[in-house]
Every structure is written in C-alpha cells, then in structure tokens.
Amino acid sequence: MDEQQWMAVDEYLCERTQTPDESLDAALKSSVEAGLPTINVAPNQGKLLNMLARLRGARRILELGTLGGYSTIWLARALPEDGTLLTLEAVEHHADVARRNIERAGLSGVVSVIVGDAVDTMQAFVRDGIPPFDFVFLDADKQSYPAYLRLVLRLSRPGTVIVADNVVRGGRVTEAQNSDPAVVGVRAFFDMLAAEKDVCSTAIQTVGSKGWDGFSISIVS
Image (cartoon, rainbow, N blue to C red; front, side):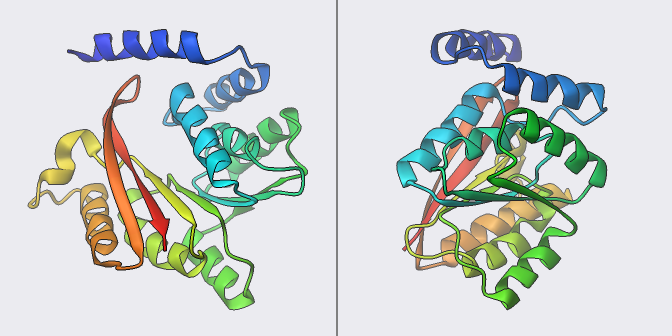
C-alpha cells in the first residue's frame, strides 16, 4: 500500500465513525489560516484520545504540545463537568490560536493553556505539589521526551495513562546510529519506559493521513 491508499482508508474510516463537528473543523481551519504547521492529530486519532480518556475516567488531564488546540478539544470533551485540562505550549502565537479555538468550542472553563518551557512548567508543578494527573498526552518536541517522561511520572499516580505520539518516525526509531535529535529522543524515551518497573507500556504503528508513525500507551502501576 502507498500513502494515497492509506489516506483513502483514513477518509473512509472517518466518514463511518465521525460526525460533522463545527468546532473541530473551525479549529483546523483557523490553525491553517494562522500559519501553524499541519501536524495535529488526525480526526480518528483525536477520537481515540477522547475514548481512551473516557475509558480511564480521567478528571485531570495534562497535554504537552497544544498547537492550535485540536487535540485539546478532543481531550477536554472527555472530562466530567468538574474536570480540568492543563495544556502546555512553548509558542505564544500557537497558544493564542488555541485559546480562541477552545473558547469557540465552549471549553474555556475546563482548559488552561500555559505558555512556556514544558520542563520548567512541570518542575514548578512538582515543587508546588499539584494533584497528580489521570491522563497525559505527549505531543511536543520529541528530543525532549525523556525529560518530559521523568517529570510526567512525578506528576502521575497508580492508574495514570500516558500516551505519546509520533514515536515511530517513519520507521527511523529502529536506526540506532541515526543522529536526528527526534529519533535519539524517542529511542531514549523507550529505553526509559523499558527500565521503569512500575510502568506497563506498549506501542502501535499507524499509517494514514499522517504517514507512517505510531504512538505508545503506558499505565503507571
């Protein structure tokens, strides 16, 4: 199969499993118009995140990498009325776009967009002793995944679900000599997961409108 076929299958699956959604469509449209990179999750992936968070019964969600807020909307919709989602974004322009999209979706009351370096922000969370999260979605710069994971584990509790996106890198994750910082970061991330005796993990390859990639799912025990 080639990428054109992957995209055709994605379109078919989305047609059968998704319903029209003005807020999500508007989030994608406004992100493109604002010049944001088109690296958001695919619609079927967004719905998967929503379903995983609902299956977990998440009340507190942490997202790393807001971009235009597309995945944020999917995740926030999984929360109960008293739930909260904190999403961390390094770029102020992206955060501004995301806030508008989140407000349009009627989710400003449960979502907080925090701008700054994610490591610094999470270190502050640890120092302040904020309550642990039930669900974490990693979708930021891949070279920092190991640093993110160290802090995410300190902000987790038994039962916390951690999903990390873009961990296959078109198959390059298998290349031990690859010096691409993203590949190096993802490989180190998997090494850390393998060494964590209190974390149960798996990973899945995906193909579709986002090419050949994949995600990992972990549960803290």
